[in-house]
Image (spheres, rainbow over the protein chains, first blue to last red):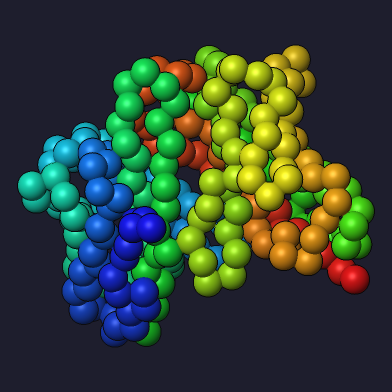
Length: 116
Length: 118
Protein backbone atom coordinates (compact mmCIF):
# COMPACT_ATOMS: atom_id res chain seq x y z
CA UNK A 1 0.00 0.00 0.00
CA UNK A 2 1.77 3.16 -1.17
CA UNK A 3 0.08 5.89 0.80
CA UNK A 4 1.22 9.46 1.25
CA UNK A 5 4.78 9.61 2.53
CA UNK A 6 6.63 12.47 4.19
CA UNK A 7 10.28 13.04 4.91
CA UNK A 8 11.75 13.61 7.40
CA UNK A 9 9.41 12.42 10.15
CA UNK A 10 11.13 14.60 12.72
CA UNK A 11 13.24 17.73 12.38
CA UNK A 12 14.94 19.70 15.14
CA UNK A 13 16.48 23.00 14.16
CA UNK A 14 17.75 26.19 15.70
CA UNK A 15 15.88 29.45 15.35
CA UNK A 16 16.88 31.29 12.20
CA UNK A 17 17.77 28.19 10.19
CA UNK A 18 15.98 27.12 7.02
CA UNK A 19 14.22 23.77 6.76
CA UNK A 20 12.66 21.85 3.88
CA UNK A 21 10.13 19.05 4.03
CA UNK A 22 9.13 16.65 1.29
CA UNK A 23 5.80 15.00 0.53
CA UNK A 24 5.18 12.18 -1.94
CA UNK A 25 1.47 11.84 -2.73
CA UNK A 26 -0.41 8.72 -3.66
CA UNK A 27 0.41 7.84 -7.24
CA UNK A 28 -1.92 9.50 -9.78
CA UNK A 29 -3.43 11.88 -7.24
CA UNK A 30 -3.37 15.27 -8.89
CA UNK A 31 -4.24 17.36 -5.83
CA UNK A 32 -1.84 17.91 -2.96
CA UNK A 33 -2.45 19.82 0.28
CA UNK A 34 -0.32 21.08 3.17
CA UNK A 35 -1.69 21.54 6.69
CA UNK A 36 -0.15 22.53 10.01
CA UNK A 37 -1.18 21.07 13.35
CA UNK A 38 -0.11 22.56 16.68
CA UNK A 39 -0.43 20.79 19.98
CA UNK A 40 -4.00 20.25 21.07
CA UNK A 41 -5.50 21.68 17.88
CA UNK A 42 -6.91 20.34 14.67
CA UNK A 43 -4.92 20.72 11.46
CA UNK A 44 -5.12 24.08 9.69
CA UNK A 45 -4.96 24.50 5.94
CA UNK A 46 -1.82 26.10 4.48
CA UNK A 47 -1.90 25.63 0.71
CA UNK A 48 -2.87 23.30 -2.10
CA UNK A 49 -1.78 22.30 -5.59
CA UNK A 50 -3.67 21.08 -8.62
CA UNK A 51 -0.93 19.26 -10.51
CA UNK A 52 1.99 21.72 -10.49
CA UNK A 53 -0.11 24.85 -9.98
CA UNK A 54 -0.42 26.34 -6.52
CA UNK A 55 -4.03 27.49 -6.46
CA UNK A 56 -4.70 28.64 -2.92
CA UNK A 57 -2.65 29.86 0.02
CA UNK A 58 -3.82 30.54 3.54
CA UNK A 59 -3.01 33.78 5.28
CA UNK A 60 -1.19 31.51 7.76
CA UNK A 61 1.44 31.02 5.08
CA UNK A 62 3.74 33.97 5.72
CA UNK A 63 6.39 35.09 3.22
CA UNK A 64 8.91 32.88 5.06
CA UNK A 65 7.03 29.83 3.78
CA UNK A 66 7.22 28.58 0.23
CA UNK A 67 5.82 25.45 -1.35
CA UNK A 68 6.50 23.91 -4.72
CA UNK A 69 5.30 20.94 -6.69
CA UNK A 70 7.52 20.64 -9.74
CA UNK A 71 6.17 18.37 -12.45
CA UNK A 72 3.04 17.77 -10.43
CA UNK A 73 4.48 14.88 -8.45
CA UNK A 74 6.19 15.34 -5.06
CA UNK A 75 6.00 18.62 -3.18
CA UNK A 76 8.37 20.52 -0.92
CA UNK A 77 7.58 22.98 1.85
CA UNK A 78 10.40 25.31 2.87
CA UNK A 79 10.45 27.53 5.93
CA UNK A 80 13.09 30.24 5.98
CA UNK A 81 14.46 31.88 9.13
CA UNK A 82 12.52 29.55 11.40
CA UNK A 83 10.92 30.88 14.56
CA UNK A 84 9.88 29.04 17.69
CA UNK A 85 6.26 29.62 16.71
CA UNK A 86 6.83 27.44 13.64
CA UNK A 87 7.13 24.37 15.87
CA UNK A 88 4.28 22.09 14.80
CA UNK A 89 3.36 18.98 12.88
CA UNK A 90 3.29 19.61 9.13
CA UNK A 91 0.85 17.32 7.35
CA UNK A 92 0.56 16.57 3.69
CA UNK A 93 -2.53 15.12 2.01
CA UNK A 94 -3.41 14.12 -1.52
CA UNK A 95 -6.67 13.48 -3.32
CA UNK A 96 -7.62 11.97 -6.66
CA UNK A 97 -9.24 15.12 -8.00
CA UNK A 98 -12.42 13.45 -9.19
CA UNK A 99 -14.83 16.01 -10.54
CA UNK A 100 -18.03 14.04 -10.18
CA UNK A 101 -18.01 13.19 -6.52
CA UNK A 102 -16.76 14.33 -3.17
CA UNK A 103 -12.98 14.53 -3.34
CA UNK A 104 -11.41 12.73 -0.37
CA UNK A 105 -8.05 13.67 1.11
CA UNK A 106 -5.63 11.04 2.36
CA UNK A 107 -3.01 12.13 4.85
CA UNK A 108 0.63 11.29 5.38
CA UNK A 109 2.22 10.65 8.80
CA UNK A 110 3.48 14.22 9.09
CA UNK A 111 6.79 15.92 9.82
CA UNK A 112 7.20 17.13 13.38
CA UNK A 113 9.27 20.33 13.50
CA UNK A 114 10.86 21.56 16.70
CA UNK A 115 12.54 24.96 16.64
CA UNK A 116 14.90 25.58 19.55
CA UNK B 1 -17.37 30.42 5.80
CA UNK B 2 -17.78 26.95 7.21
CA UNK B 3 -16.89 25.72 10.69
CA UNK B 4 -17.28 22.75 12.99
CA UNK B 5 -17.67 22.55 16.73
CA UNK B 6 -16.80 19.41 18.62
CA UNK B 7 -18.76 19.64 21.80
CA UNK B 8 -16.50 17.50 23.98
CA UNK B 9 -12.74 17.76 24.18
CA UNK B 10 -12.48 14.48 26.06
CA UNK B 11 -14.78 11.44 26.30
CA UNK B 12 -14.16 8.41 28.48
CA UNK B 13 -16.08 5.13 28.09
CA UNK B 14 -15.71 1.60 29.35
CA UNK B 15 -14.82 -1.14 26.90
CA UNK B 16 -17.96 -2.68 25.45
CA UNK B 17 -20.16 0.38 26.02
CA UNK B 18 -21.47 2.76 23.33
CA UNK B 19 -19.47 5.69 22.02
CA UNK B 20 -20.95 9.08 21.13
CA UNK B 21 -18.75 11.91 19.84
CA UNK B 22 -20.69 15.07 19.09
CA UNK B 23 -20.16 17.49 16.23
CA UNK B 24 -22.10 20.51 14.99
CA UNK B 25 -21.31 22.24 11.74
CA UNK B 26 -21.99 25.60 10.17
CA UNK B 27 -22.08 26.12 6.43
CA UNK B 28 -23.88 28.30 3.93
CA UNK B 29 -24.44 25.34 1.59
CA UNK B 30 -24.74 21.57 1.80
CA UNK B 31 -21.26 20.58 2.84
CA UNK B 32 -19.21 17.44 2.63
CA UNK B 33 -18.57 16.16 6.14
CA UNK B 34 -15.94 13.73 7.38
CA UNK B 35 -14.67 12.07 10.50
CA UNK B 36 -10.94 11.36 10.77
CA UNK B 37 -9.11 9.49 13.54
CA UNK B 38 -5.56 10.12 14.67
CA UNK B 39 -3.74 7.52 16.73
CA UNK B 40 -0.58 8.59 18.57
CA UNK B 41 2.38 8.94 16.24
CA UNK B 42 0.27 7.96 13.24
CA UNK B 43 -1.30 9.88 10.41
CA UNK B 44 -4.92 10.92 10.09
CA UNK B 45 -7.12 8.09 8.88
CA UNK B 46 -10.50 8.60 7.24
CA UNK B 47 -13.30 6.94 9.22
CA UNK B 48 -16.24 7.95 7.07
CA UNK B 49 -17.66 10.68 4.86
CA UNK B 50 -21.09 12.11 4.16
CA UNK B 51 -21.87 12.43 0.47
CA UNK B 52 -25.66 12.94 0.57
CA UNK B 53 -26.43 9.41 -0.63
CA UNK B 54 -27.76 8.52 2.82
CA UNK B 55 -28.05 10.40 6.07
CA UNK B 56 -26.71 7.44 8.05
CA UNK B 57 -23.13 6.86 7.01
CA UNK B 58 -21.25 3.69 7.84
CA UNK B 59 -17.50 3.80 8.24
CA UNK B 60 -14.65 1.54 9.16
CA UNK B 61 -14.23 -0.32 12.45
CA UNK B 62 -17.95 -0.26 13.24
CA UNK B 63 -18.33 3.52 13.40
CA UNK B 64 -21.38 5.35 12.04
CA UNK B 65 -22.43 8.97 11.76
CA UNK B 66 -25.83 10.48 11.14
CA UNK B 67 -26.28 13.71 9.20
CA UNK B 68 -29.12 15.81 10.63
CA UNK B 69 -29.62 18.97 8.62
CA UNK B 70 -32.30 20.37 10.94
CA UNK B 71 -29.88 20.15 13.87
CA UNK B 72 -26.72 20.88 11.81
CA UNK B 73 -25.15 17.88 13.49
CA UNK B 74 -22.97 14.97 12.40
CA UNK B 75 -22.43 12.89 15.52
CA UNK B 76 -20.18 9.83 15.48
CA UNK B 77 -21.30 6.63 17.20
CA UNK B 78 -20.19 3.07 17.79
CA UNK B 79 -22.28 0.44 19.60
CA UNK B 80 -19.42 -1.11 21.53
CA UNK B 81 -16.06 0.49 22.28
CA UNK B 82 -12.82 -1.42 21.97
CA UNK B 83 -9.51 -0.57 23.58
CA UNK B 84 -8.03 0.03 20.14
CA UNK B 85 -10.53 2.87 19.59
CA UNK B 86 -8.63 5.11 21.99
CA UNK B 87 -7.43 8.02 19.85
CA UNK B 88 -8.14 11.62 18.82
CA UNK B 89 -11.18 12.09 16.58
CA UNK B 90 -11.73 15.06 14.28
CA UNK B 91 -14.95 16.23 12.71
CA UNK B 92 -14.21 17.95 9.41
CA UNK B 93 -16.14 20.06 6.91
CA UNK B 94 -15.10 20.82 3.35
CA UNK B 95 -14.99 24.25 1.86
CA UNK B 96 -17.14 23.58 -1.18
CA UNK B 97 -20.61 22.20 -1.77
CA UNK B 98 -21.12 18.50 -1.65
CA UNK B 99 -20.35 16.30 -4.65
CA UNK B 100 -19.00 19.10 -6.82
CA UNK B 101 -15.57 17.51 -6.99
CA UNK B 102 -14.02 20.91 -6.50
CA UNK B 103 -10.70 21.00 -4.71
CA UNK B 104 -11.22 22.27 -1.23
CA UNK B 105 -9.44 22.94 1.97
CA UNK B 106 -10.74 21.07 4.97
CA UNK B 107 -11.74 22.79 8.19
CA UNK B 108 -11.11 20.65 11.25
CA UNK B 109 -12.70 20.77 14.66
CA UNK B 110 -10.48 20.96 17.70
CA UNK B 111 -10.74 17.22 18.26
CA UNK B 112 -12.20 14.84 20.86
CA UNK B 113 -9.88 12.55 22.73
CA UNK B 114 -11.55 9.19 23.31
CA UNK B 115 -10.34 7.20 26.28
CA UNK B 116 -11.44 3.56 26.66
CA UNK B 117 -11.09 1.91 30.05
CA UNK B 118 -11.35 -1.71 31.10
